[in-house]
Amino acid sequence: MKRIISFYCFIIVLFLFGIAGGVHAVNLGDTWTGMGGLAGVTNVYCLVQGVDGAIYAGTYPDGDVYKSTNDGLDWANTGDLDSATGVHSLMIDSNGAIYAGTSPYSDVFKSENGGTSWTNIKRFSGSNVYRMIEASDGSLFAATDKSGNVYKSSDNGVNWSNTGDLGGAENTYTIIQASTGILYAGTYPEGTVFKSDNLGNSWSSTGNLAGASYVDSLLETGVGVLYAGARGDSVGRVYRSVDDGTTWGVTGTLSGAWIVEDLVQLSAGSIFAATASGGDVFK
Image 1 (cartoon, rainbow, N blue to C red):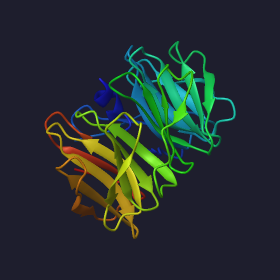
Image 2 (image 1 turned 180 degrees about the vertical axis):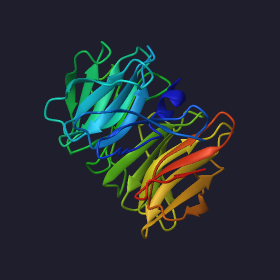
Image 3 (image 1 turned 90 degrees about the vertical axis):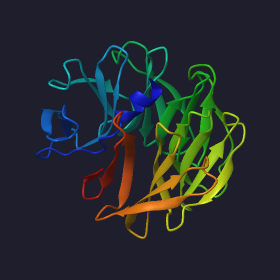
Image 4 (image 1 turned 45 degrees about the vertical axis):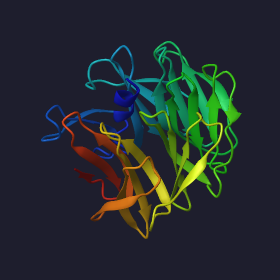
């Protein structure tokens, strides 16, 4: 379920006629249909599906979370998240609660009633919460931009602890848990992927991805292979590791792309990459 939820973050920053809305595909991307516009929105940073089937969209510039209960045909603003301008990450935990990681104050908001109301449960040091996940033991992790800190909560977001600075990192843009239980975190400015085999009690560097300065996205495929979407020298690249991150090699350069925003594997096996700044999708 957690992997399926993460797939809904595949489309990052959509622009439709100057108003950000949703784009929907029902045939594996052969054709795309623009959905309803989200009033006042310029950026849609993330999408997630709730346990009730509703779709939630994290937006900018007013820090709003929009909700659709009819497959994206109509969208309703669930309400402004106080002091937030951008909702960069959305996560649904195993109890159905929704978490929103925001900027510019690195706040985390929580809704336990399908977005009807939101509570600010934590303000981290920094300005942005880039990604949140729930691990296999139910603990929550938040990747932030302050010294690359990754925070952990073992009580559904009531209390949080810093799992320790990821050496040399300034931002942690993405975090995943592999099927082995190992956590991986992609960072800036040295293009390093860190790993933790003890649920965040300690982290170790798997090394710099040659030519990369940012690691924006991570993916584990169904056969346990790791992929990292990274950028450096104004070029977007996809890297691969077949040994749990011990070594990484470039699988290819995505022509015209600078940022590999997200990676997703379909059940049929194909891997898709969502990129910027040209807005291309690669397969």
